[in-house]
Image (tube, rainbow, N blue to C red; front, side, top):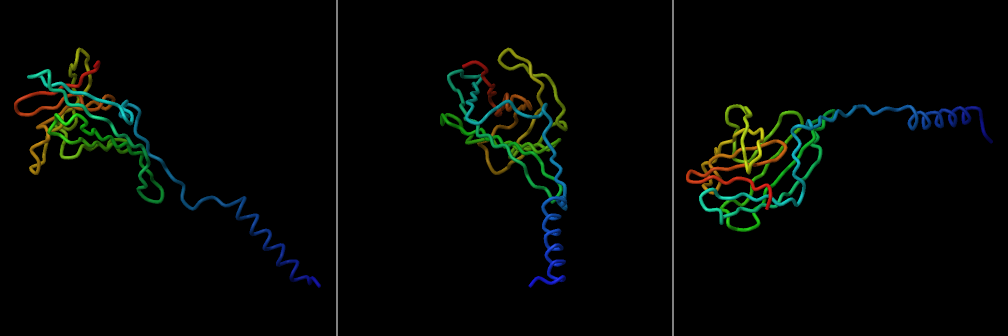
Length: 175
């Protein structure tokens, strides 16, 4: 036999279930901070990038790009877009094994073992007959001597040149 109290309890329970599924909003609203389009690289996963030695054009460093795009959870309300680029050496002519670049939302940028020169101030650099807006980075690592002393980076095109004390390597656009 259904009593009056059971009917009220049943209706209250049903009302709470409906309220849970229909009227509840999340406690925290996630805000996604994206990388601005001007900073997103054109390089894609498995792209091949080649650099030619200025002193000996027979020496060409070849790298394959490993790209990973994701979001990094900062806290309960913020998530940053992240793009990781790794230039992995594939021809074994280079003493460099890889470059690793990380871009995080708005203005966060890092290349392992490098620090921006002149506060990321950009200037025009001509490479393989084409002008690019770049900024310089210098090697700050005392641990390894296989990395170039400095390099020039374009947000859209990635690494365009790197320097050792005795030679320059420039990206080849058409190979």
